[in-house]
Length: 409
Image 1 (cartoon, one colour):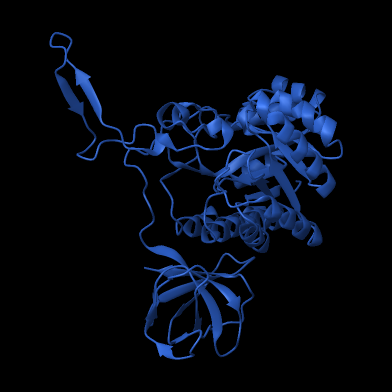
Image 2 (cartoon, helix red, strand yellow):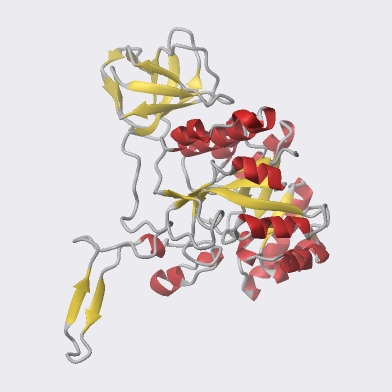
């Protein structure tokens, strides 16, 4: 067995550090204007810091230029490619054949990864991209496990494979969707998706013999989320995925919170490591319990086990976990009074959990006292006001900077 890479999203430099802290081997990030998440907080300066930081700690960064580009975008693409080549980014994620050619010209020292947006669903397509310079192919989410095995078994060993294992599933074919552009003038293929598939819609039926007489077709009085899908979760399938020989396991979510990243990355990090160490003892339930503590829609394995699976629509819209939320992030540890950046309201008596990097079991405790960070005055509760607001509390164990604390509602 080879140990697969765990690849996490990085919507900002701060989120990249959280992903690495909780066990990601690599992160993927977008440029400020040329990826499919242009609303992420990863500016050019943050991208530089992310690449430098990753290389200092022996980790990797892949950068996305995976838009389908208009001709007037190619000057900017050339510029970005040259910059990424100088920064020695570990890979550039590309979907458009024209952009691939530019990367080969302007960033010859950087590996090319073919995006899931390219809809690779066969080894014929994978081999085509390999012949045209690809080091890695990110397979379409619509594939099942037998199809993934066929691709791995019928492509050169030096061509790496990457699959999604967790996160949102797009209604469009591997993300190629025009619905957002059509309804909101925001193109998903240029990085500005309005997530129109997540909207609630009202449907009306018209009687053929009585034109204009529209009768509502409703799931309930709020309408129905006819396009919205559940979130992908392959935690149960990790053993089979590792045995298949997939090179990289990818988590979706560049717009998610640091709390989401810490929880999901830590769960999959432990799952992969535990299986590699003792395959016969693998128990997906304990990792799943952690994953269920984050805001999420319903979970599905999509088509991985069965091409005929229909259990992936989320007709009720967003089903957020009601029991847990982001409590805070450690700014500074002190045995008496640690400084915590507040993410949601905290008060004396709240039950908290410390998410410990490298451990699936959290440390649970109850807030005994809180102190104002500026005046050191004891207070009963605190609510987040300005960005970066902090509070002091006594923590039951020694922690490190940036560890994430979960609050039980």
